[in-house]
Image (cartoon, rainbow, N blue to C red; front, side):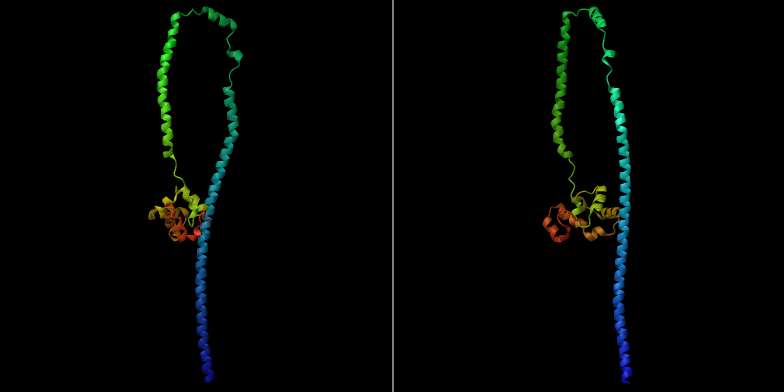
Length: 236
């Protein structure tokens, strides 16, 4: 009777231990499956980035070929233009001495009153000089307007966690170059940018907008405190 009891007790204990071990193994298996899914997602994203980079390289190759063909054709075109601009020989355009002398004899003597047009020419030159004066005065105005045309200085977007060289280039392609722009993103902007970057909720997870707000306001101390892994120069 005691032997049967011990056998039954060992059977029950074995079942409990097996159940416990199976539960742990099942949890680890689920965790491995989740890691595998994340790895596959990351692999798909990298493939998309690789395809995009290949397309950009192809476009650069075509542009380079076009430029090389233009450079090869440029010397020939320049030589033709120089040849067309070469002046005719002096022998073809000079006037014979005899013809010049005959023209001088045939020309009537100018009366003394012919000097008056010179004064008229001088008087006509004065309004022209007055008309040229406003142009000189307009030059400082253009210089004064130059600071308004200066473009907004781009920020180093790679300081934000999650923005590397590829994402920075894609953001600049969408016209995003400053922290202030990212800080002002709406839900619609986030959705549009995530479609371009092939993300799914990553902007919210990595808190791009919160990081950009701190950097846009110049609060470096709070930025370093909240995001110590972001670094101070480049998030690489």
